[in-house]
Length: 93
Length: 138
Ligand SMILES: [Zn+2]
Image (cartoon, rainbow over all chains, first blue to last red; front, side, top):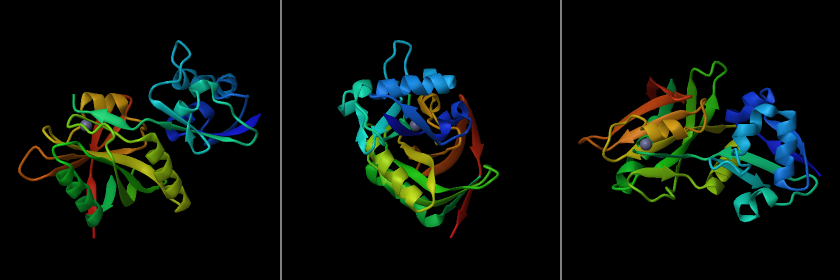
């Protein structure tokens, strides 16, 4: 499947400044591996060392948060859009 | 430098006071100028603090997506985030710095520690913070 991946500003140094990049795969995890092949700088930004979805990254398949769709196992269809967004949070201590 | 209208500044301050004793948060919408040195805030979007805490804040991912789409449809973008500090000064905490999502963003802090609310704006890049000027226009 070919999907479109929307990359937030904070990750664009890894994609040469490009905001929308193509990706290939049948699941979000496969698309991420494809992205990492094309843009190695994304590696530590998308996945933890153990290969889990990074805690401070939100991923939407079209309108839906993949946390509720099986995370990296979430299936993607031809023409889907994956939107990556950093978590926005903070704390006093 | 952050250029913001008085009504948006008031909106953030009122939101912070209304939400007390919990921290409140919201997003800044606007346009980054070419130079990236100066940003015009065209609107402010108060959001729910899903952490519902006096110590931490968190914006729901879904809300972030919705606000970004709405901003893009209007030819603008998310240019920063604001949140309140109920008992500390208007300066990013170590956690705020560690979790800052984007170095191009502006981080506005509204402190309610003293008698009058205090608003300050910061840039946060790779663990370094720098205060910036806030210009209020009518
Ligand atoms: Zn804070």
